[in-house]
Amino acid sequence: MMTIWTPTLSGRGPLYRQLLDAIRHAIQQGELPAGSKLPTHRALADRIGVTVGTVTRAYHEAEQSGLITARVGSGSYVRDGKASPTEAWHMRHATPGRIELWQNLPVALDRSAAFQQAMQTIAQEPDCINGLMEYDSAEGNASQRACFSAWLQQHGIDATPERLYFNYGAQNGLLLAVMLLGLSGQPLLCEGLTYPGLNTLAQTLKLQLRGLPMDEEGILPDALERACQDGLYRAIYLIPTLQNPTTAVMSRQRREAILAICARHQLWVIEDDVHGLLPTERPPALVNLAPERVIYLGSFSKGTSAGLRIGYMLVPAELHAATGQAIRATSWMVSPLLIELACRWMRGGDADALLQQQRLQLAQRAERLQHHLGAFALRYAAGSMHAWLELPAQWRAASFIAAAEAEGIGLASAELFAAGHFSTPQAVRLSISHPPDMASLEQALTTLARLLESSGPHTTLL
Image 1: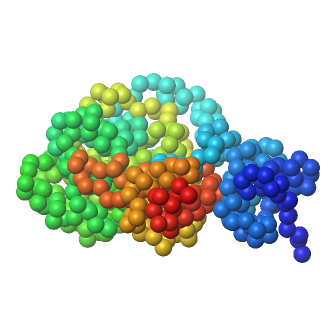
Image 2: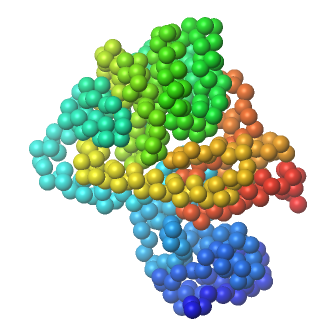
Image 3: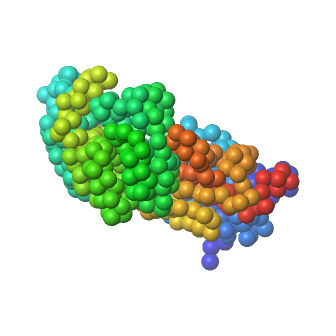
């Protein structure tokens, strides 16, 4: 039977710091050689008489210091002195002592091999390279549009090359949609709680956002009908799958009801589906149900690679000329080289492999989320990068965020997502994809559970 490593604590300073020092000393003395597996959080906590949270924080600090590495589903190991590309990135970008849960960043994966392979194949084709270095049309290369359309069809999106345009990510796509519909300075309907990037765009382009009431499936049909009867609107912006921030997923019945109202009142629909490929199962996209009315926005960022800045949009035929004009007005074209890299990943299977890795990582993190916070008013849908947490009565959002901040945890308040003058609940969004590793997420969730179980903000000062 293997003997569990048992450190000796110095008795000086915080317990997590004592354990961190003991780990460092054991590594330096060879007691924990490279590759050694450390005890589980629970086993070590029981062995030395501390809380699991203390061990979690010590392991996290040890990982941030480059002493150990955490492997999802396997455990924590003493490093061999060589950082993987993903670990090196985290070490350069992490803020010591802080765990961020406020931004929907994809879980960081090592994409270096896929990138190198794609670049090597391109480099071996001089004619291809020279073609990628030239100007292209606003519509993009026909073969690249065919590649993206085929890949989207494999993932359940009814895409055709004729309707597909490229952009520099979904935020850029949202700007293009607003431009091609001529919405600058005009009213725009949306969910009452919505993507913060829309609020930023509204300030820049003087959009008059009207946020509509929602339930667990998203926007309410009756509320949309009343809004259309009350005023003149030309478009509505919706996130029907893994809604940001509430994680709501519209059922097919709800989608059809919303689209019927939009058809009756001649509303264009801007469908933001940047998270839509993350769930393994989902209702049909709005663009599948009403391609003549929906401008569909998707992105490579969430499931595959944010750094490529490649997004795509499906546009009704009636708006093709306006779309080309909007692209030329903002960027003239989208880089053919970046698009080609994405296409190589699609053809070679790397795009699907990275998407599957992202799904797996999110599923593992979601399990820990439910373990720690499932007893509270938590909303989460499979595949989501974030969760929506409605706070208990003793907490106001501002106080809870301040208390979490004092513990080194960053959260996103409901106020950040309010469209126009929509009334915000006492709630926060938790981005489980943002922390660099599972240990960091565990530490943050353990701390948040402790805060939620307390009697309110005053108890955190004791």
